[in-house]
Figure 1: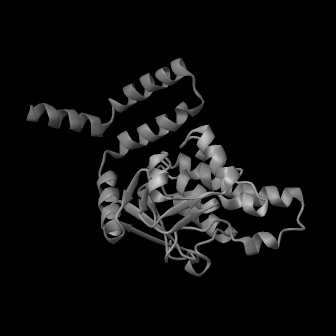
Figure 2: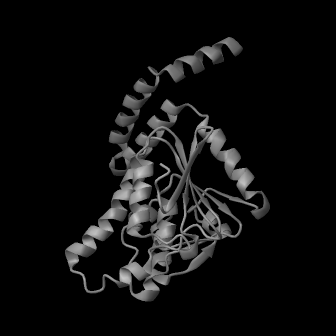
Figure 3: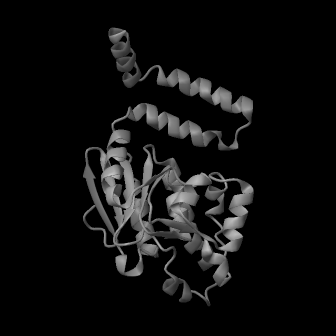
Length: 250
């Protein structure tokens, strides 16, 4: 893990903290950072806390790198884009929660990266948005995630206007989970993440898997999937210990 060049990785009290470490580029996403993120997320053991070094979470794709591909063919562009899509899929499939701690700007692909996390905790200074339209670009892959977080009309407005919204607005429209004061942000994030990491690993893993599995299901199919997970959950050691503890207290 220490061999990463664009990513800091440390584990403490069941939380794997991943810090995007390109502050001189506002943590812009380049192929190396995307590959290192995907590799780090491949470890299934810990809750992941994703943050950015410096003043911003992530400013999106490294445009200097994209500029170098202006003469590339469609297959080259698809290969580049697919790397980001594969990262989003890996995040969705990770068995433990992935929490984004957003301070400063989370824009374009950086906003998509935050939205791909299961939970977003934001400082009051945080700003979110998809300004790709302003340079004739499309936030194509992140729309698959954004439209699961906000209404279709709000998603359409965000991606076609390029509007940058403050944390308070992002909370109001359901894009993020919590907003914390700037001066207590690090303490609040650590407390939240540590508390979540202490929850039953089997219960949280089954819950995350079922929640996202229901994305493409009809009502009856979702209920049937729920029946199966309900039965599996009753057979876990965490459940058995939890029930025994509850019965002894009652």
